[in-house]
Image 1 (cartoon, rainbow, N blue to C red):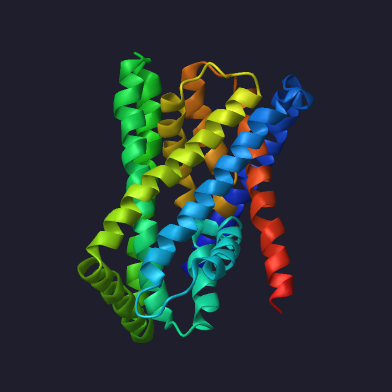
Image 2 (image 1 turned 120 degrees about the vertical axis):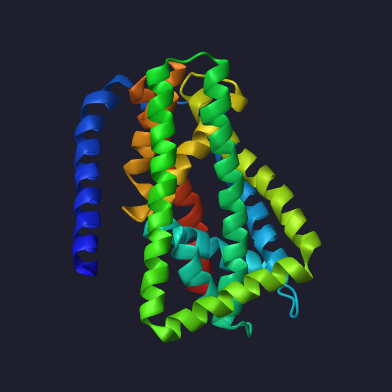
Length: 305
């Protein structure tokens, strides 16, 4: 059964990539990449970088408890884990890589995992709330067509359902293996202990997570402006960005490649933006994020050997 699921995911991911490649050939001819505004592009890159730094500070609030990991030492490790999260399905690269790096600082596997999961759950909560705002409030304010709203709602709830099914599947697999179940239960206990023992840090993390996600939204807003759509309100862009980014949590392709772009087309086309421009924005941001993540990470990995 597991082999069949893997084959289905691989086939679906490849199909989406083929479709997008064909679609890019037809649609992106209408977009002149040389006309991109470098000032807005720089703002987008700066916003992404700052959001990652805040994300590292957020997680370090949970990591540095019984033993302190200086932020300047922790940030490169967090940066590497962020880079891995961009190429591993389901946004799980950081969960897989950061505990390995923290192991060198004396952290148990379940301790690292529990604290990382708490930070990720808070991020998912903020993104989910913004997505709900974008779908149920923002779209109604601008009086979009019922059919368009229905498409957005379907995408959101389909994402939530698939994520829930995936988590349920993980729980079923863990029950079959007592060792993994024990590990997961220890990680859950660590997550709960952090909430009980350090409520102030949880609140600070939650507040800064809003700022972190806001900065990611600024990068999308700046990228749309770089392609000539500077009249968009940032409050229009952020919720729709959040709704489309939820799809990246589905373990279908590498970091939602293809699925996120399709969700973005459906949502942002409601604002009257041409599909070609939406594709160009998402593609440019994806390339920029990969460069910002892997160039510093590669340097850190080489020098840390």
